[in-house]
Image 1 (cartoon, one colour):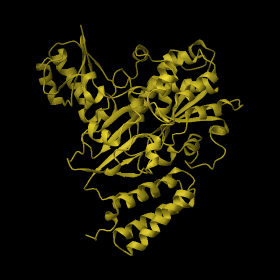
Image 2: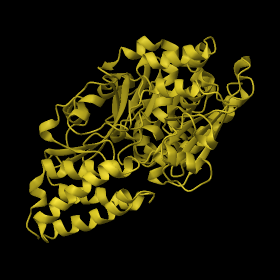
Image 3: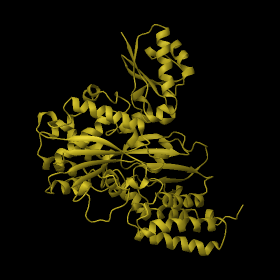
Length: 513
């Protein structure tokens, strides 16, 4: 009887040598004449333990990690195929404290299944949500998503059900569902991890969206820097077509939904929904003036759903288990769970899916283990490169949309990047302006010119050239960008700059070295 061994195939594990580990395990098993089957699953998200190798036993899966090729011989000597004792043995996978304390709804299958096996997906409740949706009227599907309290997980946190209802209510011969998978925020990887580890979840969510609003075509706008996600999505889409989950007659329902992946060139601005639509149409990625909203006049001028990966991948759970089930997670107006991506100067970086409401301090220390350097964590940036810098005095803030907004921050895509007490926050503020200058689409003056002037002002401040006057000017410039920019790129660049000036003023007044 063959023993099943799981070795992740996604980018996080591959970057840590998973391919060589899988090859070494296969070679060692052959040498010892031990029958095994290697399944290339997705990562569990505990990045400091990658490559995390799992072995299926009669008592459940056992984990070993981080495994290198040179560890493989000793693993076999320790009878790891039967969960033998070894220094890398972490015990039963589901009992690892960092997994056990999570509340995985969207990522429940990631790391568990073969990502491109439709049979494996179905065996773990896959497509139960779609089957339930096909028994409902479109208005009932939209209402279920509305009642769940699901808000956009891409940054703006706009209620998903309202978007869907707006598209549903439009009268048009053609409607579209688009997924913005142009994950560009520094310190974020949830979209990539889900697409590489459970691509059917996204496909199912988009299919449900199409049936709910009467859209017959869908597009996944994927950044070209995600080749592993691209391959997994295309394999899964092909399997879904072959099994009748996509195409002209979805599960013999008479409903049509076609889906394809389109690659973007990696422009940060295409994370903004209207820029993404421009790029999908083959144009330069540039912000559109609104109104009209994409839900009314979107892709090729037709009513269009625009949601990000996590938003759409949350839908199958809602349809399968009910809006009330999903809504019972979270606090206030922040319902459900959020995949938090912990990166930067942190001991245990990775993905942690929890209901809204835990504090930043709990995330940083209970999960993250504090800084990688062992020094105090001075600040965290939440919400990507344009998120506010949050000082240690505010680490007890709950992770939910309203609580973070209350301290002048935003949750965004759920990225949390930690900095220890050696970080120069004035230089980090300069980086925000430089980032905006490089990534601006150039359509509006406050973003295009303001960010360029902002870099110049920051250079003068750091060089102590008329420092007080330039500090006043940079603050005034931030206000202009905040209120005058067409989209969130220019409008959010002031967040890291002004928060750094407010909470770390000493870094802006250091003597020149």
